[in-house]
Length: 195
Image 1 (cartoon, helix red, strand yellow):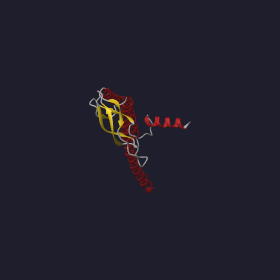
Image 2 (cartoon, one colour):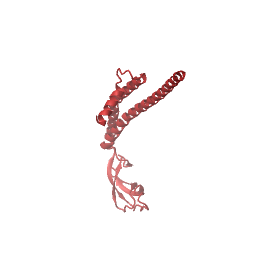
Image 3 (cartoon, helix red, strand yellow):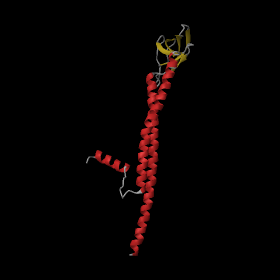
Image 4 (tube, helix red, strand yellow):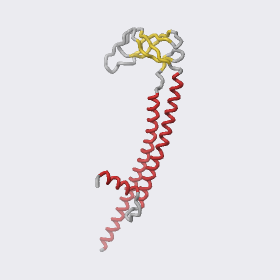
């Protein structure tokens, strides 16, 4: 019998104690708890998927709202960006730049760009309806990532909680079995010493 088959057989014996006369009450409770947790983990899949789907729908609704209020435009740097002293400081320098609002009015302000960019370089920026700089809109890929992350995280939280409770129950059961064995050995030792 292969190791894969022996694992399946061991799992089956753990899940289904049956009418085995050697099975202790604790074995039966452990099997019931394990079956209950497996069923709970399976039932949690559609709930977690629904939650992830709700998050995805919310992100897509946000994306649709932002699609009409955020516009990409080109900003022209009005000065040279400072040169960085290390390779870790490549971005996040503020440099004056000029861009145009959606209605065509010029605006001037500081934009975040890479170090060492020359004056006159064009960079893409996002503006709102008033022409103020804003963050880029959400993307469909980001909505998918958020939905999947929330769904998987919720399911893993349920499975992790079930696993912790099951491990705690097994630890308590092992302690109870150990105490039982000690009492039995003490009883057997007393009987052996009487003879």
